[in-house]
Length: 97
Image 1 (cartoon, rainbow, N blue to C red):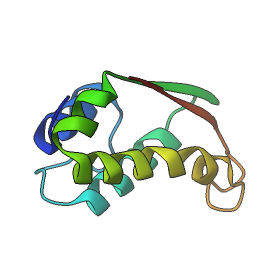
Image 2 (image 1 turned 90 degrees about the vertical axis):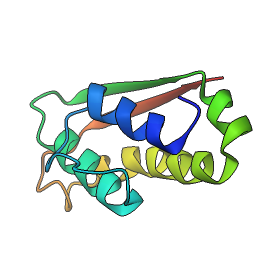
Image 3 (image 1 turned 60 degrees about the vertical axis):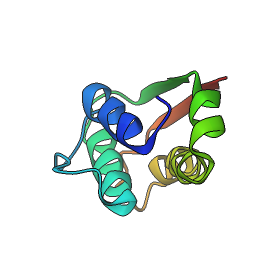
Image 4 (image 1 turned 180 degrees about the vertical axis):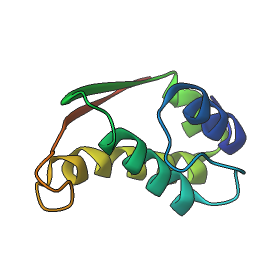
């Protein structure tokens, strides 16, 4: 994934989304949809592997920064017992350059 569109498509193809993303226009919509999709899983332990992230970092650095920020904040948000209504999750995001 080396562009914003490829990142959105990759997320759409691999992660549970709630609600489903209708476009690639909003990082906020992606963030909310991924959070809700992961929060809705029955599993308590989740691993996301972002392969070849350096491609996006090199070719679309601003979009990479936003995507990285979203993925970096998810583990803490999903671990919060208040926001998950006592159904917290352990999420690990592995970034493979």
